[in-house]
Image (tube, rainbow, N blue to C red; front, side, top):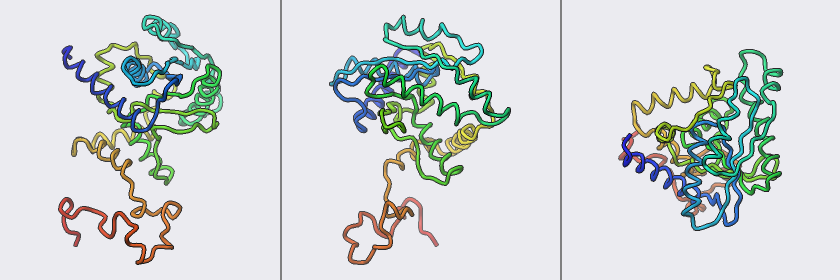
Length: 280
């Protein structure tokens, strides 16, 4: 990739991260952001973009990179400290043998992600409290959010995803996802050009039959037929019409009467006929 192409990609990713941060109020004056750095392309890119935004943002905030060393066999412990030392970024390496716990509790061939994720979350939440972080930044991107929505639909019968900003389940931390407007393919291109020292996950990354892998495959096939399908799905999550869904906790269908018609923003038409054609 030529230098000008890399610069354009960098600007696009920074702009999208900045827009997401502004739209969802992710960062405020004086925040101390704990940047969760796994050693993968997404978290490296997130740290890179946040460092760039830190220099130009209208608010002052600090960054602390945190890596959880889960004691996976062959984990290159020197890689992240050497990289972060070169950047001059404040960081902390947290050592916790979650690998052994997961391997002991999960039978061979079963999915490890759920337990591993719970153990990792608990450790990171505790670390955030120890260092006085006001926000925890995770590197999930647009594709992750769309995949998660389908995972919840197919395997949990729930219409939900990972929100851009939320309160953690320990009720002590605010979690933010600055990359939610960024596509995975752009992040992958950027990470390749930046030559980040990628550390592969040998715990869950080697499991080929994960449900998320199947969802990724499905979305790739959809995008081959209809480019930017993922973007369209993502935008639909930002434009929810409660009266045209089925959740009685979100909308009072039982109390709907004709004299309430003026309260509705949309009436009988659920789709735009000029786009989809007449339904016979």
